[in-house]
View 1 (tube, helix red, strand yellow):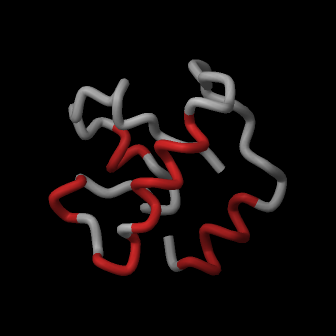
View 2 (cartoon, helix red, strand yellow):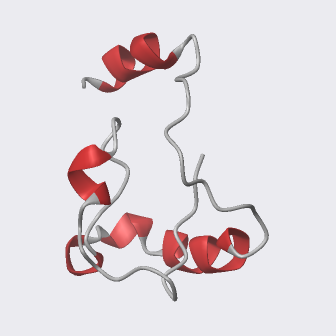
Length: 70
């Protein structure tokens, strides 16, 4: 799981279509039931290292994407 720091985000939206499980939303399109994640991202993103390189997907990634319908 990755967390987005809204203070660093420039709202370019490049991450929205790049997310393989469609877990990232434009803030203006954020579903009401996901609103708690704004505060969670703000809290946790500053505690973790910045991921700047694409990493190898977990071995279960394709199966999980299928389960989610992606």
